[in-house]
Image 1 (spheres, one colour):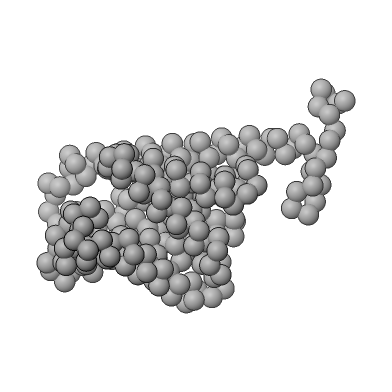
Image 2 (image 1 turned 90 degrees about the vertical axis):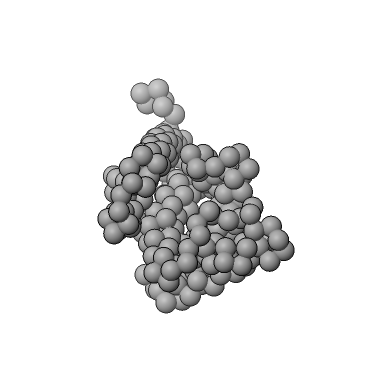
Length: 243
């Protein structure tokens, strides 16, 4: 015994580390996870309040570009923690090789997911249950929607939930399934400000589907999921034309 701590050693990632050091790392991961998620919740709440109280009264030429920047409020605290904890891009699921392949995988998965989860219900007459409430008619509106959904909504949410939170949960529990379930449940909870219980559940299921893509599809990276998420969200406005 030294300072009341037993000198045990465990095997982790090809090397041995002390049990005390491992426990400290777990405590740090748990604290980082908690702070990161709560930071995203606060950012989401503030964003929704801003949209409801201020943004809707702003002229479109000002509101449209502003929303690109403001949506990243949900990722500010997680990004700070990522830098503080010295997490590498690879820890988050980002890869440098095969960027074009990653992009194409993301587009394909986004279109496929959209067809199954939105297109089929719309064509079957249940469009009201999957409609986002946006009734676009002008081409520029659809272009903006795709850009906004991919570069802001998809990128920020995936960085937080399938990147930062997923990585921390996997570090804590050591298994992909726990990280997938945990990050998906938190993803659903994150949408509490914008929906009812049913919508929160559906969002959690979608989050789990995205995690499954990452874990089971070769070449599917966090970048792929950002694009997949954005394309899926934006395609709702396309399917609405047929609803």
